[in-house]
Image 1 (cartoon, rainbow, N blue to C red):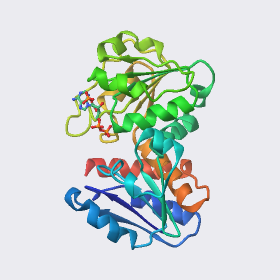
Image 2: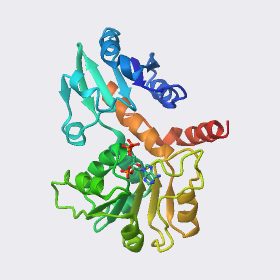
Image 3: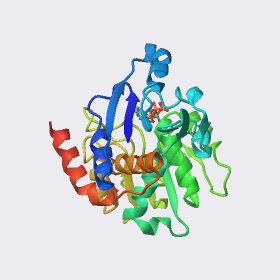
Image 4: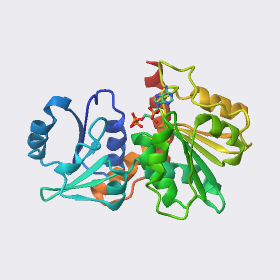
Amino acid sequence: MELGLIGYPVQGSLSPWIHHQFLDQLNMTGSYELYEIAPDQFEEQISDFKRKNLNGFNVTIPYKQRIIPYLDALSDSARAIGAVNTVVCHNGKWTGYNTDGFGLTAALEERFDDLFYKDKHALILGAGGASRGIYYSLLQAGFNTVDISNRTYEKAVELTGLNNSDTITSPMTFDEAEQKINHYDLIVQTTSVGMTPNEKAQVIDLEKIKKGAVVSDIVYKPFWTQLLKQAYQKRARVHHGHEMLLYQAKLAFEHFTGQSVDAKGILGDFEKMIKSKNEG
Ligand code: ATR
């Protein structure tokens, strides 16, 4: 199984580690290589890349949208989200998927399955690329409410246009989200706020959060973001960013191979590896 990742930059990516674990689980031979493509060379390099005849590859920043015109087919969800992080190659044909948001919901479901019973309310912080996939997957998961709060209010309004389900969804400012915070069972932080080296930054205050609510931060460096620290102090349940990374890779690998792999069993080793890298 020949796999890889395209993006810019890709050095330091944790994906090779994860995919090699999955290859080992299935006793498959193969590799997962990093292909760094400079933005001004994307068009010419992608044709060379096609000739490598990989079985599949992942796509990261800044190419999740730019890859779309090169695909032969697109899953319905990737089309709705407007971004692709996984491409399966079969007989020279490329099919695009997006496993980012579904990776998050799969990870959440494994750990906090009570969140997926009836009458649950979610809030997403941020309305950028990462937020789109997460919004789509929370709508699919059947939450009653999925609100979106963003610094630039207009972008939150625009994102709610993706909703064609029964889910109630309102755009709001960060101030409004803070006021309503005790209403939510799940809060997903999708902005880069709090990421190293700005570790003291926190996107909103959780002072009034409901005890037992789940706070999921997609930032995984540092492992304990300021937001997660406050959530923990307030007796909310915390969900660290590396889990989404692991589960989006699991779903991608399952698209590549058509076989199931176990993410839960390698979560402990992944956590140790992330923590040692974060310190390094
Ligand atoms: P990604 O693909 O990682 O989501 P993006 O599409 O550039 O990246 O989106 C970044 C998100 O982080 C946006 O919601 C952005 O808010 P704006 O739409 O107002 O720009 C949010 N963001 C980035 N820096 C921020 C900051 N300092 N404070 C609040 N929100 C921030």
